[in-house]
Image (cartoon, rainbow, N blue to C red; front, top):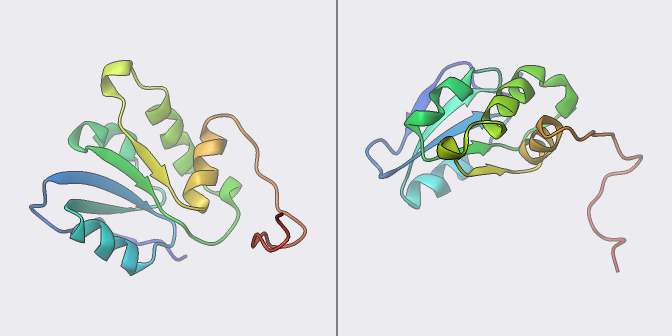
Length: 123
C-alpha cells in the first residue's frame, strides 16, 4: 500500500545509476542519494528489476512497514540478483525491510519479535 505505483527517476543525469525498490521509502532517502551523485530509478515493490540490473551500478532496497515474508515477488527477484554470474555482480544495500528481504532471498528466515527492538536493552 505504501510503495510507489509507477517508475520514477530522480537526479536524472547524475553519474551513479541506482535502482531503488520502494517498500515505503522516505523522500529524504531519495534526496540524500541524489545529493551524493546518484540517479535513482525508484520502482514498485513488485517490479521485475532483476532483468534490468545490467543498466545500473547498484541496487537499493528501501525500508518500509510490514512483514517481509509477504513480499514474495521482491524476494524472487532478489534471488535472481544474488545468484547471478560473477561478472554481473552489483552492490546491494538494504535498510530495515530491505535488509530482511536480502536475508530471505539468501535462504534465511524472518520472525516477528514479541517487542520492538530499539536497542535500549543492549549492554
